[in-house]
Image (cartoon, rainbow, N blue to C red):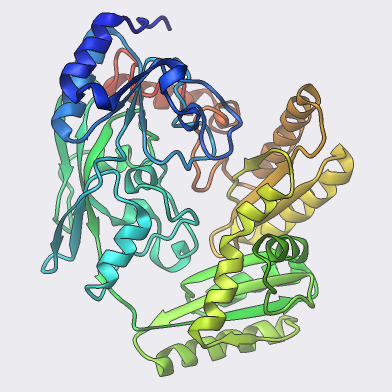
Length: 465
């Protein structure tokens, strides 16, 4: 694909829309952070960076870019892990972080309307002050809500509450040609044709730019209690999860963790984990409106776990103890990142009963490929986060080794009935593996959907398909 290079006429137009203080040109003016995302494996500067403040600016810029065949990359906080917010083809990068207003809390319809740059942690804090609850809980709380929408982010509470798509009622979006469109709304049910809203959620900014979102809220659960359950090995721990689900008990979260990642977290945080005696753990959380209601549920689960071979059941019934455990869990990614020079992630999802098999396979792969591999994940929904660590490998050897390991891992995921990504998306980094997973028929359908929205392929090109 050949795109127009930015020239002075384009710069002048963007300054006329946003003003000189919100337009940055070239590597001398653009902060290095905007050349990569969180993992930093893919680097490319945009030719020009603009900070937009409203839908009208987004619309005018997209209309101009469409007419002039200039690629546009939408950007939030840049917390992604697959290069989806990197300007692979240069062009314009549109930073939506300044569009960060909470516009309306509708307590009658239980909805919150926000701009795309509002942070996840700001949403959670705001609605909880009104005794309400926004359930999606991805690990990166400093991500923008549009970033969560674009990747259909899941997180630890997905077992009970679902993922971001389940909490997006409506969207205002700017299409690649600059037209503004409303999809969905405050209605609870909608069978009015194709669900364009659900198609845009998870599209990684390749179909439209989100400029407003109407989010579904729930009443805030009054109580929450966590169980930390040590097991002699991960296989025993994971085999327990289907037994919990089959018992018609749905915890808010079911996480698995292994000893070496816990030790890395301890070192990173400079604080002790509540228990370090076992090789594997399940971490479960239960919420409800009373302590009695939760106790009845977790006592049943504790009994199931002990019968299945758990070494103990540690109840975290104080806020301090719960915060200690979940702070450690929340630091796993940063702890692993701090232990190496560079890393990349295999964000696969497999059926729940195949988690232990995949984790054991990845452990054995360390010896087979002579490289360090660490991981953790969501035992309740089969989403694994497996990290391959560069350590002291030279760049050329690292790229070759990474390609080898990823090829083997994604092939194993396909064999187990899994998929390439559970919640971090495809972006640029995982396109090859998506193609092998979906096949020609699936990829052709993806490309035709993209074509229907973006005939000139100017919106976040080079991503997904």
